[in-house]
Length: 548
Image 1: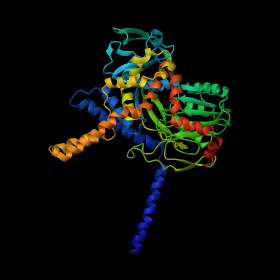
Image 2: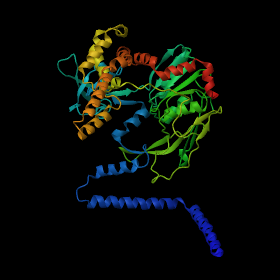
Image 3: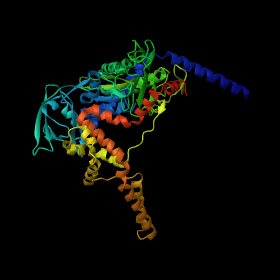
Image 4: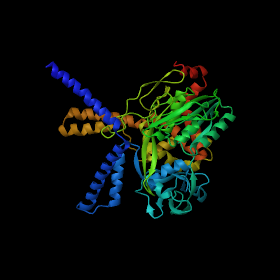
């Protein structure tokens, strides 16, 4: 018996050893052979479907469907693209697009001009904030979503688009024949001094223009003797990697490692270091604001600043998108955007949150470490995304404010009321403003539901169906209904301060554009106020780096 067991133990290592030798012997030829066999299988399946399927197959549409399905199985960021879907990528690379220069949105179900851009075809032609676009060329907009409408308005420069506008002060529609131009999109939405010596910059994305715009904003703020800076990357979805590296270069000493990328092929493995003397002096305190909408390049900047102890990160945990994509053309109008590497910030942390791939398709990567330290030795969290040094809980909006925002009632009210005022100061001095806004809301179809009210309605319906004559149930329902009515009736008074603040933001935007909007909104921005407090208190600021 022992002899047989010994023979068994001798055979297993020999098998493993043989497998090891076979594994080492595998060459690229074996991989190519496997790929060739798979391609043959796909080709045969494709040929049989096109040839023998009972009905006529739209070959082009079927090919699209196969490509989309093939790419979507890998991860959320590997996708098949056609010409019109490349707009976002091209916009990041060029910093401009062919269009007429208007920001559009849905207000009360209508396609509405939120604002025309300065020195744009729309602005020069006289299109105004609040104009309703009823037609784009010959297409009525009633059933168009925002993305489809935007695609129709965009186009090659020097081509024409006709917008038919309904304006409240006009009896009939107005046609604007606009010639498209190159429209440059601003990445720095706002910059300015906001509290004593604190400068603030809001960066909305990372494109070809971002580093130049940010450098200009930084130099202006430093010339105004800013001794603290806030870089707001909240809801910034990212963009170009090179833009993030150029921006980090403005804050980090020359020679420091900023980022590394790691992939399967050699060209995907790179290390990025700071190449220039920073624009921002080391003695200028720095705070980066992030939230769940901060992704990719935003996380690279925030994570590197945190890992190198150059500044503090304030807000909420970021999204966790740390994958590098490369675009490969399949022809003139078709491309594949493929994940080719992963981002690692200076501490070695992987930005990408886990569980983003189908493990049946992708061989599971090696488990990442979970313990990391900054250059100064303080612990920072792994596991995907950037965890802020200071977590700021944002007070949720009330149900009435959410309903007003969702339906565009702030915007609609201002369009009706704006002619009452000559300046923003006139609005601030109007003691009857909120009374008129409440009257305005009374004319709207306000359907606010409290948290849990829908579940209550469902339960009420089911319980009534069980016994519609039960007196105890009727009494209980009457009491709950009365409570809900009282709660909803008091919403305006309870949310009045927040509603007024939102109205002031919208009025400030009407009179002064982005500058006015930011000047008002930042005064009650909890993350900004917390960052200002820390930047102005050297003891608290430096205490974060020592883990206190």
